[in-house]
Image 1 (cartoon, rainbow, N blue to C red):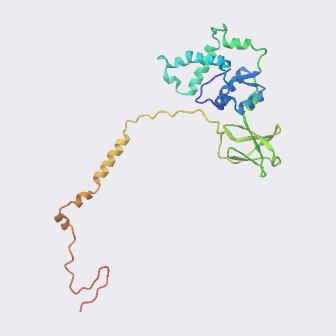
Image 2 (cartoon, rainbow, N blue to C red; image 1 turned 90 degrees about the horizontal axis):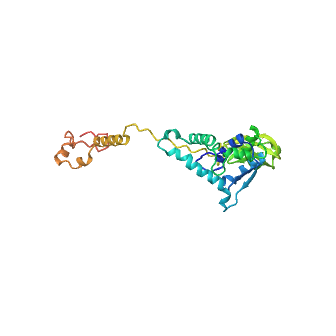
Image 3 (cartoon, rainbow, N blue to C red; image 1 turned 135 degrees about the vertical axis):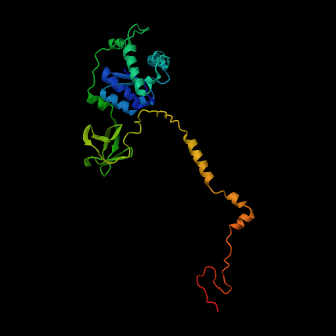
Length: 291
């Protein structure tokens, strides 16, 4: 079908691999998966039901049922990933996840699928096609989009509103008190369709929105590029400037230890012009006349 690398094994990454597989290979009768959290999510069950796919989970504790996929993982490690670490491989050519997945798809389609398998004696893609009892139908774009939408059940309040992950939406007042289905793209919670008994009641009007994407709809982690060296030691310059400022400040300790003569020279002498008859008190601007 299809495969891709991701920074996490979750519902969003599963959809990113499954959607192009269904678009190019067709809709199968069943999908065989294990019991990881991404494979038991309600979204996958809804998507399979929309496309008419039977979802089959492997038996817990019996790894024999997953032998084929484990063998494929081994082939990927030995024939694809090893090439990324050879001296002849330009490391800059695989600088991000998108480039890695593009090269991986190219390897699967041009190397793995057409190559004769040593155990089966047939190419994997040709053997898969020969095992089909009838050609798989390709889904229409509208049906494929519907399958990858998420939904949630909510009861309409008396004020004709519903809430979804902290957001509040206004809906048709005729739905007050009824349990409705909210259908939405997990990456765009501003566009929510309201359905009741498989009938659409239009798009809900956003009343208050604080979250624009579903909590599970986390984008691929993108590592920040390493900062480019400027050749300037910023912290050393800051330290030098600080030391210069300290040198310009008054040395109060030196003043406290100055000789007594220096201190006395700087002390103001009393005013010798004061007459004995002056009765001016400190802080009083008035003077009494002398007799």
